[in-house]
Image (cartoon, rainbow, N blue to C red; front, side):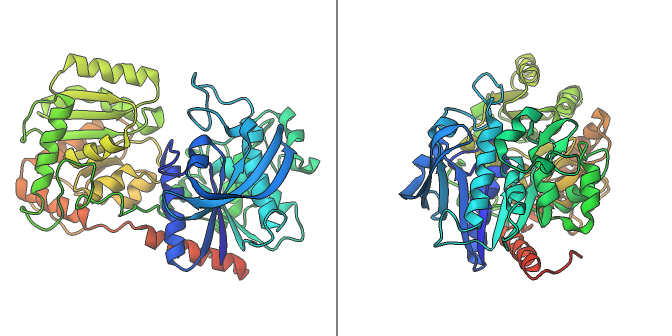
Length: 493
């Protein structure tokens, strides 16, 4: 089966969030399953620099506001996966974020930049750009690639299947109606039954309407986005797809996230015994030292590795600082985002030196140090399509404290109350809370601290967590089954 994976970023070349991790790992897992996988990526500078054995497939010419667009093919230096890269300097050769300028404003031509990504995917699928390789399946990821599904739908001769994966419904790719003529689509596509969304053009809706099947990155999130609370105004569109919407849980790249081999952490360790876990205590001490926290093995360290945004519920963490301090705990934060949240966490660290520490910005290597060194990881999200931080935390024996929502609900098994034996019960891996309220988060943290004070029970909880297997191999098998069902014409069940 020939599969074209289409996305805007890929780890480790270009990353703004979990989407890059998925594009970095899923193609390799599909190759293991026997698929012939290629990627299609926009020619951002970091991506072009990471393309080895680059050769020109075809000169596309002047499209979408660019005078010169070239399709290149090569092998990604980071993974060895074959990739097509759209070399359009006028649209993609820019510093910083693939989506925003340095001042935080969206690039004004994002409609053209990402319509081009979908357009090239559809024309590759039609055999027009590389006749030597014709995909059976186009798999588009998030709004940046969603227009591929609309463009594929305009070709009645095409037999290619399509899958659209929603990584975060809150980011929809909305553009002014005056941009619609730029896309070269029939006028009927600018209707409420198509891409029109409250007077704007919605790229996200292109994927939701025109893909053969829609997936999300966890089963619970697939159900949630069909409700008004989580549907971001598109819940009606999603409900109309019925069983054609499903959730496939993201995985963890075990070659990158493994405390037994991780080159980024101060000491290696593995599940099994106190001896094999000894390195985790050294990682905690190293983290406390690096952040200026008081060196205290008995103080539970709660970690946060996250974008600092409202979605991630980090205002709740700020609200429970008094309770955290009363528990005798410490707080370590790494992230960037909302300036108000950045300032608030910085102020909290200044007010409580040795107890709270903040490192603004994202550093991949230090994220590993954080996840290995913390005792527990806080993920109190308002909504969470999948969440990768809690999956990394589980693998490192860092107990997750999460809200019961989306992929967090699917991946963390609550330890129950603090009664003797509860945290050592088979399958218990962390602590969950329900209402989006400070006292609910504080209650879950208090339960975690109570178990932390009982070393045998905490050790069992860590062993349970590290025994979980959220591998990309499992996800790849599910995607292969989905692709095969589409190509065979089977109905969604």
